[in-house]
Image (cartoon, rainbow over all chains, first blue to last red; front, side):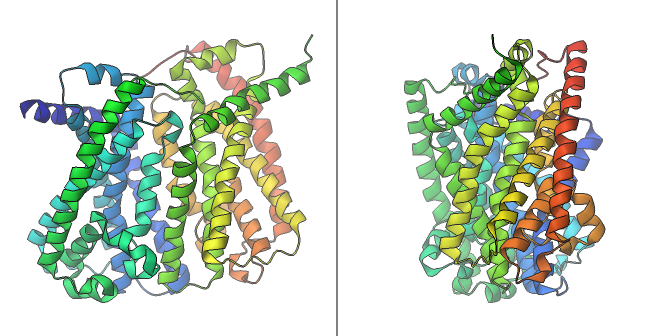
Length: 284
Length: 272
């Protein structure tokens, strides 16, 4: 256990250094602001072009909050998968890390945690931008903080499992799949109701949406922040699920994701050793 | 005895070759680089449908989604490629080789463009089949001309950026990262660039995809006047100008940066 905790802690510190010390703090701050704000502004402009309404609309808050929270998904998924490619092919240290007395699973988890921390910075900036510049209709006094804390905790665990699943898959891939984290996060963006409710998907795609922990995480997050009724009215297919029930479903789906992730990770590491992929470098 | 022109052309083929062969060896890219980006484009389609946008906007998003492939290719496989090559030890070999760096960069562009075009076509085809997009193209010639000029200007810009990235260390990745979403926003990848106002759209036109996308959308969906920023004929002339400027500048920038990098010992430097 202590080895796992140590691996996690050191990897988080290492990841944070890699993410933040490439420039001076001012440029890092600019970088941290511009990217998330630009990302959310794409949707805001799309919304404005069509809806032409003010930002007090409940759907706008629904979309904005989902998009802001989704920054975490991209951060964690990309963080873990990129750590594999970065360490293996860029720094060419993965083989040494693997051979050292650390827990490899918790090492990658730590690298994902570092991205979670930089992601938090982006989420805070995005939400501040929404509240101050776009006058989002969110009342801090109405937010159910305890429910939000449970939702975030379960959501983070689910993202960690998904990140490790993707990290394990990345072990089998060449360097030209370095965008895999972004690509998978982009694909899940479609299914988990980040910017529109699952009801907007064709009926045959909805079961996929309901199988993802992220769908329940985002819905519970919205119920905590926007209010249960506001979120249910936009997302009819999830409206029949009670608030506590929603957290239980999130817990259940997260556990399933965890079991799949752990077994797949073990299989993938074993296969990477057999195929000589721990120290593979690919130059296309 | 190999002539200069022949050597130049052979270098282009030689640099493009590993990119094409590499993608055949590792076919997982067909799923991760083609199918998954298609789904993220679909997310914007469903968003437009959720807010009840006119159907032409679906086509607008699909065309924009397809063109993101080229921007990502320019950023990650052109601009920051020399930094990656530097770290891998290939850059010193490129510089020492008796050939032109311009030819090496062009080879990168050609090799990258081939695989990127597969991805872009897959997004267009899937978008057409899955969402029933109705294109109203009157004539192929202006569309092909706009596309080719956009590519020439875009990859010229990529070569210019690559020369600038020659001096970068680890920040190369973050700069590339920083140039993703802000350019998607400024160039109007998912909405008509006209919506940003004339001056913002005009400033964003320095990125060739801004005018290229706008021109192609005007030609593909002429029924929606909201898409047009400026007339296509003017956009074609500006794209031609950008192509000449970027390709010419990249030649001078590359020579200068290479000289600077040699003087400062950055050809073999590995700032990790």
